[in-house]
Amino acid sequence: MAASVDPDRTEWDVIVLGGAAAGENAAQYATQFSGLSAVLVEAALLGGECSYWACMPSKGLLRPVELRDAALHLPGTAKLAEAPLDVGEVLARRDAIVHDLDDTSQIDWALGAGIDVVRGYGRLTGERTITVTGRDGATRDLTARHAVVIDTGSSAAIPDTPGLRDALPWTSHDVTNLHEVPRRVVIIGGGVVACEAATWLRGLGVAELSVVYRGERLLPRQEPFAGELVADKLRADGVRLYANGDVASVERPDARDTGVGLPHGGEVRVTLGDGTVLVADELVVATGRTPNTGDIGLDAVGLSAGGYLGVDDRQQVTGVDGQWLYAIGDVCGKALLTHMGKYQARIVGEVIAARAEGREPDDGLSTATGHAATPQVTFTNPEVGSAGLTERQARDAGIDVETVEYDMAALAGTYVQREDYAGRAKLVLDRAKDTIVGATFVGPGIAELVHSATVAIVGKVPLSALWHAVPSYPTVSETWLRLHETLNAARRSAGA
Ligand SMILES: Cc1cc2nc3c(=O)[nH]c(=O)nc-3n(C[C@H](O)[C@H](O)[C@H](O)COP(=O)(O)OP(=O)(O)OC[C@H]3O[C@@H](n4cnc5c(N)ncnc54)[C@H](O)[C@@H]3O)c2cc1C
Ligand SMILES: NC(=O)c1ccc[n+]([C@@H]2O[C@H](COP(=O)([O-])OP(=O)(O)OC[C@H]3O[C@@H](n4cnc5c(N)ncnc54)[C@H](O)[C@@H]3O)[C@@H](O)[C@H]2O)c1
Image 1 (cartoon, helix red, strand yellow):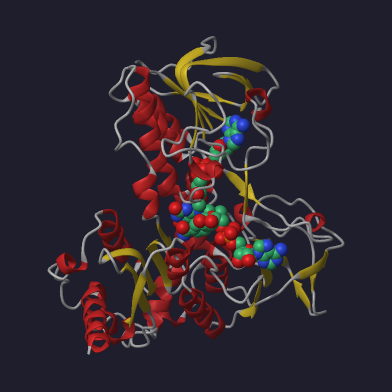
Image 2 (cartoon, rainbow, N blue to C red; image 1 turned 60 degrees about the vertical axis):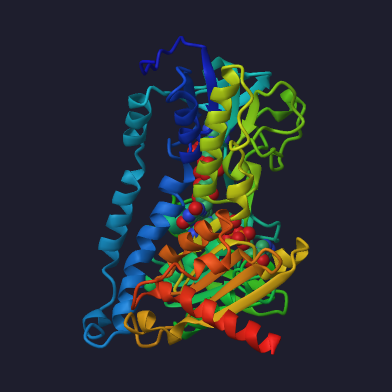
């Protein structure tokens, strides 16, 4: 189908509400071999959070910080790295990475792929129908012949702490698109966003940085040692960590909306539950996400607004008859990660194409297998990479668990990287099947190691077969060999 942006067109085979990367993939997979037509309805920038406000700018800010830290800890480059980062250049590269918040290249991609784009805010109005409101307030009614896919994503959640909203704190949008580096910053939250943001803010020169979070540990969804190793490094870099830190109130007398990434007013005072007062020039809220389902017309199709959308393994929304409504990405709450949203999109696109032809999709068109191995890399220093289940999750799932851990600092492959390498690996095994159900690696430069674990988990490769997968010397992948040897030794001594 030729691309068109015909302003009078009202009907397509597939409507995707929300044009993030996942939505783009769903439209592509639904149309590419089927002859179906699709339109993306996008209220802001085509490409969504990841391209402009999340994954891409954050990784662009983290890379120079990581590189300088690695150089500082290697004889021969340490002196070269003593100079602080060139903040102007780092921010300019970040701006290039987010295309100066211009989505022309993504629009060109969509139209080139034969996918239409309608700009505006869409709401369901009934079965397979959406009303889009443009920036000028004009409305347009769209109908889908076969399917509607919801990809409206999520937004930063702001807790109901007294004074917090009125203080106009930075969210992930501001901290990834910062234009000034404040001298003193308080971050509320201890998850992925907080830990990554603390890493780049300190690296870019924030002089006083405090992180206040609920619970004992950073990165609470990971194996406990992950948060501990990240905390050790943040502390060593001068970041103050407030575990079990409840924020009682926030005061900022002259909060002002100065624009994205600029300080939103003057000094801010953050009072913790134990009476500690932290004074800063900016406050960052990183306490989780809220699905964007509050105002997308869910009541028109019999669903409640505000929560995550329940879906089955074909990403079809549960509680709606007729096999026409699907949801992908953050909005379905399965895994708030770009690559998992795009995986769901690939499956959903093919499911829609099959059903449009009148056939039920084959069993392989299910997101169950991929989700059982969900990989994630947190780009802190050290990096935290994981796939599948933690030990806790595996035990809760009733699996007969066996675990093995290894200190990655003992590898030749990590010693050549830096003298002070600190890292740890852990495998979670299903004892009965002798297969891996979870893996965690923590250390500088482990990001690319994660996919080997994902392959082992998805392929259900027995350990006896993995033993013959020989890692190159001297690489970080030799972690696999040492984990095998450690496990064999433990099994032998248990047997003896
Ligand atoms: C700081 C940060 C860093 C991150 N880093 C990573 C990372 O490194 N790797 C990773 O895998 N994940 C990362 N994530 C998570 C990742 O950004 C999200 O999982 C991903 O963006 C979710 O994509 P999505 O498809 O759900 O939609 P979103 O990216 O949330 O986009 C939804 C789109 O829908 C549009 N929209 C919403 N409602 C409507 C409507 N009613 N009508 C029309 N359009 C609408 C919005 O304008 C938006 O463009 C990060 C998140 C944050 C906050
Ligand atoms: N590299 C990546 O893959 C990457 C990077 C960033 C974000 N993400 C995704 O984005 C999602 C959102 O990340 P996030 O860090 O915002 O959320 P999160 O749910 O991962 O972490 C929230 C943190 O805030 C703490 N918290 C919650 N309420 C609090 C309060 N009132 N006071 C103090 N602490 C409080 C929690 O204890 C937790 O530590 C994650 O699920 C993650 O998958 C991924």
